[in-house]
Length: 109
Image (spheres, one colour):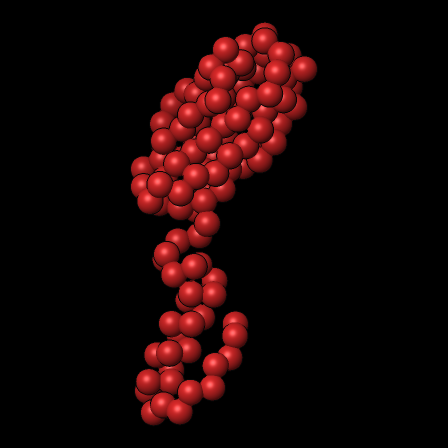
C-alpha cells in the first residue's frame, strides 16, 4: 500500500486510506483479476482437460482459437476442453461480464 500525505480530518483520512488500499489490491474493480487454471497444458494423446476461470465476474464466455484441435464443453466457471488427435497449439480464452479476457495454451504433440 502506498502512503499519501494529505492534511485531512481523521474521518476523511480513514476513508482515503481505505479507498487507496482497495485500489492497490484489485484495480478498483471490486474483483480479483481474471485468470485461467491451468494456464498451460501439454498433451500427447487425446484427452479432456478441465479449465477453471478464477476471478473476474460471471457470466463467462469460453472460446478456442482452433476448433480442429479441440472444443469447449460446458458453460460457467468450470469447463472441459476436449482435444482431437490433431497436433498443434490451441489457445483457450475466457471473457467475463466486464469483457476482461484470460488465455491458456494447449500444446498437442
